[in-house]
Length: 120
Image 1 (cartoon, rainbow, N blue to C red):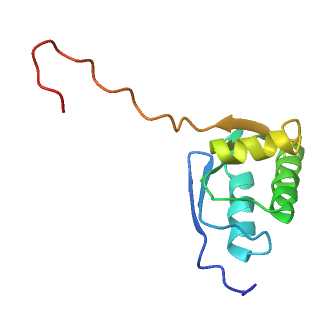
Image 2 (tube, rainbow, N blue to C red):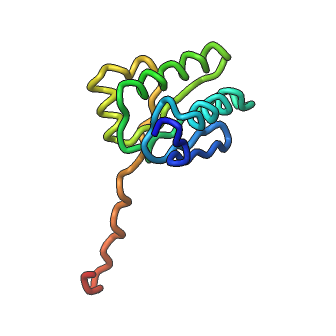
């Protein structure tokens, strides 16, 4: 289903392209969204992949190409990754190719116990 681009959800806000779902580098909507991101007025731009379950080799190559294109346009390009994707980038030694931001997916700490209250 190379022509099906409706399965990818994109949103650009304040220089951040938020992607959700499974990515396919050949999807027209993904390419258009990335070009819109690079064309936005912000100097610092980010591709947020925290809601992308996994990436394959072509998608990794696509991301590094987008990073290079952004640098050529004078942009500071970052990629925000889930812990799983962050580990993938580390294992594949891709950390030096793009600036990585790890999402803070740590659950909040429980509230402190108050003496005399029953346990939940």
